[in-house]
Amino acid sequence: MASWVVRSRSCLNHFLPSSRRTSCSGIIRKLPVAFSGESAAVLVSRRFESIEAGQKLDPCSYEEDYHNDTAHENQALDFPGGKIPLTSQMKFISEASDMRLPCYRVLNDDGSLISDSIYEQVGEELAVNMYTAMVTLKTMDTFLYEAQRQGRISFYMTSCGEEAINIASAAALSPHDFALPQYREAGVLLWRGFTVQECTNQCFGNKDDKGKGRQMPVHYGSKKHNVITISSPLATQISQAAGVAYSLKLDKRGTCAVVYTGDGGTSEGDFHAGLNFAAVMEAPVIFICRNNGWAISTPVNEQFRSDGIVTKGLGYGIRSIRVDGNDAIAVYSAIHAARNMAINEDRPILVEAMTYRVGHHSTSDDSTRYRATNEIEYWKTVRSPIARFRKWIQRNGWWSDDKESEFCRNTKKQVLQAIQTAEKMEKPPLTELFTDVYDQMLPNLQEQERSLRDAFKKHSTDYPTDVHV
Ligand SMILES: Cc1ncc(C[n+]2csc(CCOP(=O)(O)OP(=O)(O)O)c2C)c(N)n1
Ligand SMILES: [Mg+2]
View 1 (cartoon, rainbow, N blue to C red):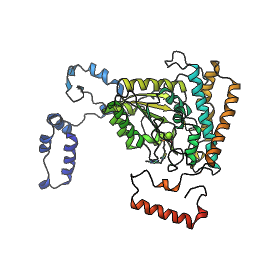
View 2 (cartoon, rainbow, N blue to C red):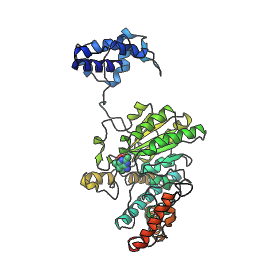
View 3 (tube, rainbow, N blue to C red):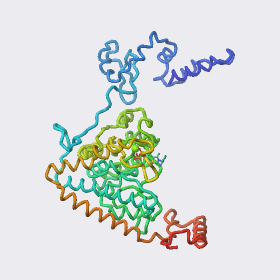
View 4 (cartoon, protein in one colour):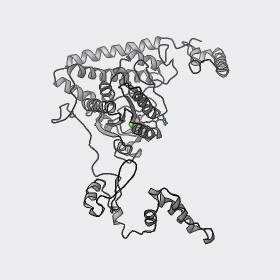
């Protein structure tokens, strides 16, 4: 800080006539003791004998250097937060390490358990429930996506390729934990008992939609299931989650908050504010980042220069793990451990789940315009989280081809039935478009309602007939 101020003043002085030049000594005197005095002045005036020192960038060798650096034995800078060892080595922390951080995985691509892996046991009942929930999510996505293509709903987003993150994370949590999704996490709601019919009602915005048709499709939420309603502006849920978690801690609820974001969401300021806030307030929140490689058409290498998201945890003092998001057991185990740490130690945890967005970003997107179809196909088939988990449960004797056919047939029927029911149901009455914001409707809203009714009367053929005016 001191050197920055002194340098800035020196640079400025360089351009000014000598009569207007200012002295730096006053600045140094005004700075806090920790920043003032000799060291700052020395830093400014010193010329490096060689720039070689600055080019030695090995982030991992600090500890070793310090122990070898006998000249500074027992010397440290007293600073809030703990003593900082002093070193005569001028070393910058590298922007990257040679090897990318490893990714925790339990199941191989062929669904076999990796020997020596450490994981949370998943028994038959839980495993079958997880598998069938993933298939249900995929089936619902397939048919609601088609419904949008047929013009029956206005918009849709699938979780295709990310079913394991959805279901396995939800399975590792308690239903009392507060979930704050981004938008590609419908499986979390399904796992908690929000039905396919309820999802479908929301997408059609009919009178049974708890949001009364005011939200875009897939912007689910459920008070009953402790799932905070999705909001379209990216990342707002992340800083909110830090607050929710802090509140749960104050109330000693013994639960945590879990918040989901995509890789793109981490470029928002709210991501950084949320992580920092949670770390400082020691809030029990699990940040789950679905790193699916893409933020609409922006690939991750145009989004950030760090080794993904997991490395950002260190910067905020947050314990973090990178996990294979297409391995349901790894996700389940990591979230299970994260939850225990978050609640028992009052701390946030960051989980980066590596996956791939197999579908288009939404029905407003055509991803074949910006990525190779064989890349999509590879993740859809070889790296499918559902196929991998099925191989594992089938190998355990917990699933069979016959069970698969029967389950798929029934689920397809159930989803189609839900769509037909939701479509036939009338829309919420027009009056409700203006309620719930204020305790009493304000004159400007009354005016807007009158004007909308007039427009309905005048142009009745342009408005849907199933809206009760
Ligand atoms: C504040 C804000 N900026 C931009 C958008 C438009 N937008 C919607 S989704 C999205 C990409 C998000 O990508 P990511 O977080 O990786 O999630 P994914 O879609 O991959 O699951 C963008 C830019 C938005 N909704 N809100
Ligand atoms: Mg993404």
